[in-house]
Image 1 (cartoon, each protein chain N blue to C red):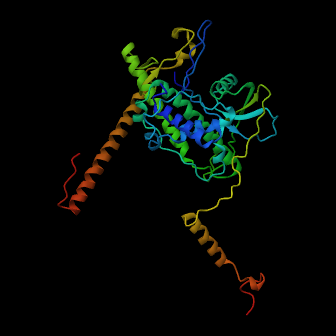
Image 2 (image 1 turned 90 degrees about the vertical axis):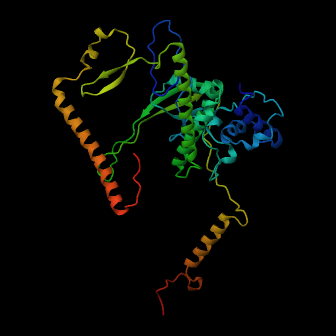
Image 3 (image 1 turned 45 degrees about the horizontal axis):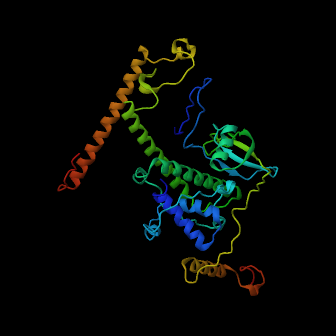
Length: 244
Length: 154
């Protein structure tokens, strides 16, 4: 539940600051939650004092596409570190779901800011925020997908949600072909008939040439390594060769 | 069901409503190039979003009352060439014109206002500013010469 999560605690922290300092009500809560991503030091003093309440965050609509008005025109805007996969794995599913939307709104805000800066030919304040958000979202997605595969394995024994198969294409490569939903069966599908899931025999010489090229490149790498080590050994006779 | 590369399941009569959790669609609010009516907001949206998607997105996530959405695809030019004379493509994008319901209006705000910055005494920025001003002063010519160039005269 949000009440026990750090996200909820950050929200309540901001709410408390809000009542003390009387900053503009709605947006600050939303943005505090994002900007103080991993700011732990403020929370330590409040742990155990009061149960966090569930608060509805700002509903200001289109204002959420922009930063707080205090940050407009600033050359730098402070932001915390991105979320790591390790931290995200400790969160519950509801928390991750809510965090996704927080990150989504922040990303939309940064995109609008970047576009406006390009329009006005000015520098966007602290552009590293975009990469942080992107990475956090990617990690969140991986964590959720991990949980989904684990659940699917336990319930059905299938690893992948979308069925597929290992098939060979015209060029001799074996690849994971993912099935697609059709309204008609495969033997009635005229276009699908033209697709070849086998390698014709006249492609064999080309495959052989490919294999030869691959072997040559691998041999070249091995030789290069051996020669550099020999040179180093000549130059530094007492050198200990690395074990590899 | 997450959305990285959206694969829509086939719909047949009686199927449940398609729902998307954790959408990976990002909107950019842009300042309109041409003058727009006061209730119109202009967005740049991903190419695979539809009008209904935009409406639901704004209503559910941002709680914005949306009336009508109109979209168009802007072609990004392929005319410019780089130093190797290869054509460089500017990416295409979809533009959505969203008209707000409940007679709400929206004007694009000025996000980069001029702020007079008072530098802190003894800070790095202040010292740097002073140094730059001194350098500029040294580069200027003698004001007593009245704009006459250095090489003129004795």
